[in-house]
Length: 106
Image 1 (cartoon, one colour):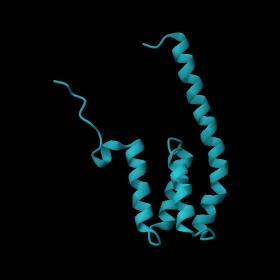
Image 2 (spheres, one colour; image 1 turned 60 degrees about the horizontal axis):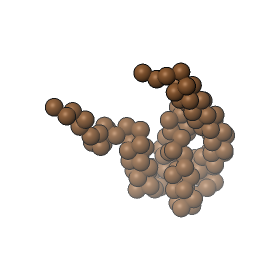
Image 3 (tube, helix red, strand yellow; image 1 turned 180 degrees about the vertical axis):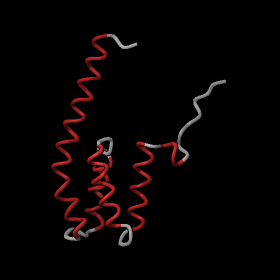
């Protein structure tokens, strides 16, 4: 059970993460749209952008944008797309790729 101060701390952290995700979405949306349009097509630049974006995919809007970028690149850079899909699943849905550890100590 969380004490009052622990609950307040986690609430503050959660609110800060939401605010940070909102700011990052504003930063990455124009870049992501440029990738989707094909204006930015340098694989290294896109790779770096996706590396940063995946960290904020706990936010639904960022996840939606991340997926849109990946869909736009699937034929041009299939390996890049698969690497970043794996990174997403590793961070947020480990059970889907068999990374979930068995916590049953019985």
